[in-house]
Image 1 (cartoon, one colour):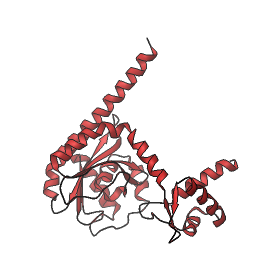
Image 2 (spheres, one colour; image 1 turned 180 degrees about the vertical axis):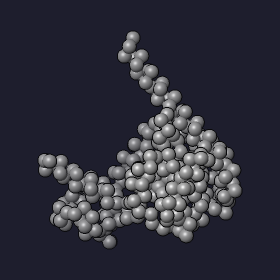
Image 3 (cartoon, rainbow, N blue to C red; image 1 turned 45 degrees about the horizontal axis):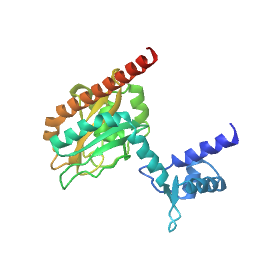
Image 4 (tube, rainbow, N blue to C red; image 1 turned 30 degrees about the vertical axis):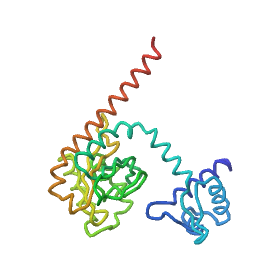
Length: 265
């Protein structure tokens, strides 16, 4: 590996240190995580800071991700076909249930919000595009995990199952039983498993091979989005996810046919 490629690799390792649990890190903490000496980390952080990939808090001396990554994230999301196709269905679901709707995908052991449609009600879930949450303790994550191969699920669970609330599922065996139920009923429910006072119901968006490419979620305050109500609206969430999947497959099929016809006059 050349020195220039090694430098890029090390810079990416530094950026990957920042997570939802550790949004701010000191240079010492970063050096410990990536296994580099402080002088190398200091040099790389300087370059990343000049290019606005990280920014340093002048008071605490800690670092956090910079505005350049946010700009790149918005550029990616703006051109994300899946998000574009799902948009009208997500807005319709929000109008129907008047709760916050999220559109997520799996990234490593987390779900990441690709899109968020805010509830029109005054009391609502605080969510933002790009937010990450652990898959095992969220409705969206469980909806996706339920349709993954078992070996993939176990690799994700082996990353750890920390307790976030009194309702967090901490047993792999119990979670696997929950995933089986999700496969049978077509949607998942999370009752304050990740955050106290927040309930959610979600359904996976499956491709033609039955692989989960995303999930849609209806989320809101637990006092309003009760278990009874979630069981009632679950089928409509599942139906919406099915329509999104059909829209994506139809659009991709049209693109393939257009490309074929353009090359075969």
